Image (cartoon, rainbow, N blue to C red; front, side, top):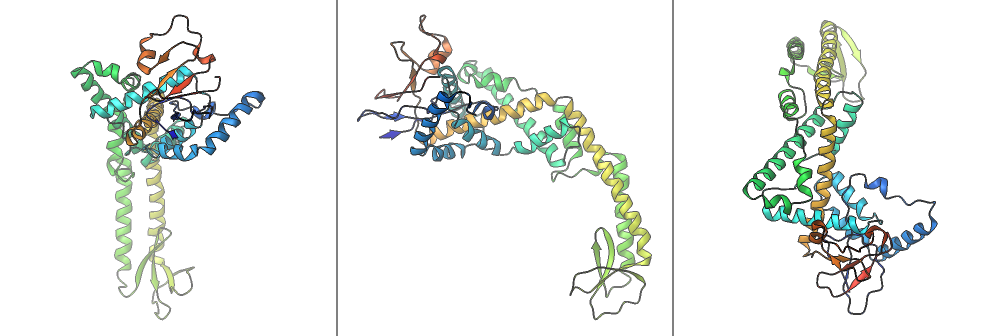
Length: 394
């Protein structure tokens, strides 16, 4: 019988030779945003590749891919889901790394129990944040929606950090219970002035506000005046329909209607009648097109100002973004484990070195004669201690 305890164990790379009464515990977690760089198999090491291939084959038999998809579904951001799937397939976890992953997952569970420090990132669009970071690095103007995504990220990080500070102020023990996530959250550097500036110049739909700059406000007023003038002139022919074609105001009439004004005949699809740009409207349409181009330039200046403001704090923003993705992965593991009744396993190194839980590892209470755990085989045992399974050498 195979049972999974996804609340927090290390590498799922195990030898699949359980005893008849054994309960085999398999799960795999990681926590770093650069997991993709670490997951490739070196072709120069044939033996390592051979072992890894055997593990992949075994995991496919166990339908590990379905379990990965299930765990990833608990992540609340798209990049968090991708990161969760990729890290679950990373097969070279060491003993110490697995203990650290246990600590992270247990910390996320404690945060869920506390209630105030929510790791639900449903409202964040980290894809737009990453796009904004790339634009800022190239000194290209941000998109309005990208700017809003950055502001939302910083606001959420600030609320999360504030809630953690309140929890620690009420009871300092929470800092330890939330380790190793506490220092990550406490290390957020929030640029409040950037949040304020984005809110001042960007509408909720991502467009630039009229009040973002005096020049932009003046040009948009000119556009509205020109459009009103064109529509008013066209309304002098009430029997005909006013139409906007590629930003130019024109008159559209059916094939049976005869027009009594001069203008430019524009190409139109078959069956929709005739589209004519009146001669009197041509100068106004030209001015309208020119003014709209100036509006676009003014909007770009506003967005470029935001970009320059963001560049001043770009490293901190990128760090927060990466940390949010990592926290999303950790929270996915914790949420999955709680949803399916997972238990925290004990990990130990064979050879009489004893077993270690995450608390033991953190306290530094290790056997004084213990050899480097990253160079030994290690075991995963179920929480009930019914059985164990041995991992491959690190």
